Image (cartoon, rainbow, N blue to C red):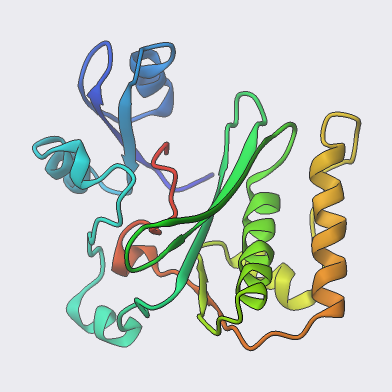
Length: 210
């Protein structure tokens, strides 16, 4: 069972804080330009609801969920870096990914939407795209991802997915094949690092749809 989340709806049929995705979905699905986001605790959700959505949606809101001692151990992110993230619509299976400048939030690349994918797949593709982007531009910047699985796949130079290849996701699997081939035939100086969400807030490349 996944970790419980709390959902803030700033713009929807009924605004407020909701304790299940189903309740949140009723307020935002089909609602023009709905604005909502998930949080890991009720306190954070209540705090966010009292403030402007602009401070949270699509931005790297620095919400610290760790103790001072834990935060010191984690440290701070390297601002001169690239952050990548993927998005997966659980209802439709549609996926996409993007990479941004961690410091400025500037969009550096975006791919998708693609049919019938998984979150791990696009998280993996996002990291490899970031590495290829850096190599092309001769950048030695570190790359942040909040997906331990995707980071592990990149390290192993294999996509550890059990998702089946089919006609719908042919394009997506072509990208996976290209990504694996690139990893196996290229060296790179860039470090691939874990974005510590609990200490630093949402990944700057987050799509803001959780």
